[in-house]
Structure formats: structure tokens, C-alpha cells
Image (cartoon, rainbow over all chains, first blue to last red):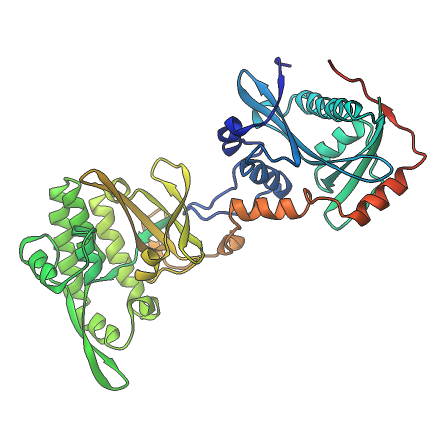
Length: 170
Length: 268
């Protein structure tokens, strides 16, 4: 895997978001009419990332930069609970350029995210956290990623989404 | 092959605005254009409303508007050809058009029984000319409108997908509503760029060159407008990316109690 630098997104990264591509374009008819995306969950993630305007105080947006280009994006937010901190992963995606390579960059992105959660909370004297993500039921690559990293599909399930959770300590 | 063609008949204002896009259309300037320009003479129709004469309106073949645009783009031979063809079609369909447009608007033209023939004849003239793709910046459709803007999704002549936000008034003036095909034009006027649109229609051209107005729509879903990227992003933000409620937090933390934890290595 190419050398990846993990940085927090700031205002200077906004142009990278605007062109971030993690899926194929929406197909079109011969006369230009837009058709539904074959993997709408991927298109939704891409659309969400493209409109990100960091920095947002509430969110941590972690970028995997490869030779200055945006290889991956992961965004999470800390939510407070009296018993333990909860980190909600709002989005995680890998650029099309690095997809189809056995999930190497996706794995590295997830590890960077989990390490970041542990580092942040350790500095605040915490030793445990609950990490939560919602994954589309049709998104098998993401489900495999979650499984590889120890998440369990044991949260709430709707028609389209499954909550995946994992308790972490350090 | 599916083709996007301009609607065959336009009002005189469209012809004049093809020549002078930055000025309000006036009859005086229109008369000057007819006198000195390459436009056809057009058809003046006495429009009736509720049985009474409600005024006169002048219509042209869209080829007249394209002739002016071609001339301004430097294609004088093409402009002369289009002008001649515009006059020929206006003459050929004069009686039918005059009768129909006296009682209907140009938006109703697809209901006329001669409309398919008019489209085919216009298409054939454009095929003989062969330069329409050079003149058109992009073709696509009006995906949606909001309070201020018309959102157009189109493909440029070199195949690049683009999205344009134009003032809503621009499409309203041309009678273009959501879902309608459009042709987008872009040209320089002085040191500014002018972008405007013409209402269009989609037809199927067979291998033998025949134009078919209707065809089995294998892409039936394509008739539904797709949400914009911003709408999709908002949907994601409110769905998979939505913050957990206090109730969710309580539920999740409650369920996590006693579960084994994964040990995370803190990186330097």
C-alpha cells in the first residue's frame, strides 16, 4: 500500500472533498437523462463527502493523503453518555483509485480512526469507548470491513441500515 | 440512437434573442433583423381567445434562430442554408401552423397531427447542415426548479456530464418545465459569456435515418428525475450519518455492558 499521511481536515482541504470520487458516476441515457445509481449507498456517501466543509467543531474528519491526493475519508463524532464516551462513525470511504485492492486502505483508515479515538479519549483520562456505525444492508464490502475490525451487527436494524458496534479499550 | 432536437417552432422573440441576447426583445429591433439578417419571414398568426381576436403573434421555424446563431459563429454558408430551409418549412406548413397556433400555444404543438412530420423535416434539414453539435454547448434536461434557479443536468458535446444552475426565469420564458429536454448554448459577447437554452425534444433515429417520435422505452425509469447531489447528501446526513439521540445512546451503552472490548494500540 502506498505511504499514507493521516491528517485532520481543515479549510484548505475543501477542494479535495468537492472532487472526491468513491463510486462510478450516475449512469445517463443517450440524451443526458440521469438514471438511478446502481449502488445508491455509495453515491450517498460520495455526495455527503463532497459537501463537507471542514472544520466543523463537532466532527473529526480524518483524511488519508497519498502524495497529496485524497485517498480516504473517515468522519466521526463524539457523543456523550454518563457511563462511557460513544464515537459515531458518520462516514468512511476510499477513493476509487484505491478500491479493489483487498481493502488495504479501508483497513488502514479504520485503524487510524480507532487509534485516533483512543488517543483523544486517553488524553481525557478515559480508558474505554463504544464505537458505532450504520451500514447499508446491501453494502457487503463495508460489512466485511466492520467484521474484520471486530464490530458486531448487534444494534438496531431498519429496512436499509444495520447498526454495528464495538467496545474498545486501550 | 436517441437524439435531442430543438422544438421545431419558436416565437419571434427567440429569433431576435438569438441575435441580441443582452437586449429586451422589441418589435422595432425585430423588424430590423428581418430586413438585414438571415432570419426567415416567419408566420404571423391572428390569435383568438374566447372567440375574439386576442392579438397577433409571429412564429418561426427554429432553423431561423439557429441560422442567426450559425452566422454569429462564423458559419455563413450554414446560416444561409438554414435560413432558406426555415422559409421553406414555414411556407410548407403555413396553413396548418396558422390554423393550429391561432387556437393553441407552441407548447401544445406536439398534439397537432402534423407535428411528427414537421419534426422529421426539421431534423432532416439539421442533418443536411450537420453542424448543430458544434453550435450546442450541451444537451440535457431541466431536472428541477427551486425558487430562484433552474437545475439543468446535461452532457457537453465532448461527453462530459455537467450540472448548470440558471436563473429560473430563463427557462420559464421558454415554457420549459421540469423533465423537459433542453439544448444549452454558450457564446461570448464582448468579454462576457452568455448562456441560454432552447426547448428541445428527444426522438429516436433508426439506422436508416428515419425519425421515430415514440419508441418502447427500455429506460422507463429515466422519465423520473433523479435527486440532485445536494439532496442525496442531505438524505445521507439525516439517515446513516444522523447523530444518535439520547435514547439511542442509552440503548447502545446498555447493550454494550459486559461485552468484551477490543484492545486498541495508541499510535505515537
